[in-house]
Length: 118
Image (cartoon, rainbow, N blue to C red; front, side, top):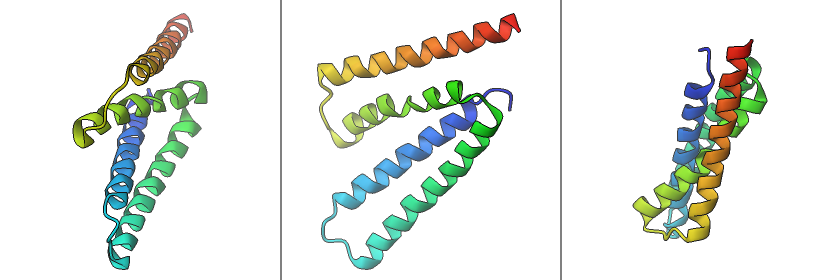
């Protein structure tokens, strides 16, 4: 795997899964202790796997590239919360998400330019 994009994408998807599990658990206040424990174990398992993948990515790729790529999580969670949970997207949230994506794109272009020069 020469570029961390795939592994970072997996960590972002796992982060979304973790957020959904937490939101679903919070939306059910009358959960039994057993169901609460299952949600908790699910979230912990997803995040443990995510932690291992991040370790792999950070060991093999510059953190200055891989970590900013992970910030794609924030615009994606905004979109997910809008379409799946019906939460509104304000103008400020939309602009902030665009700024995040622009920053990730600029970092990606910088890394591409540097690899061409090397």
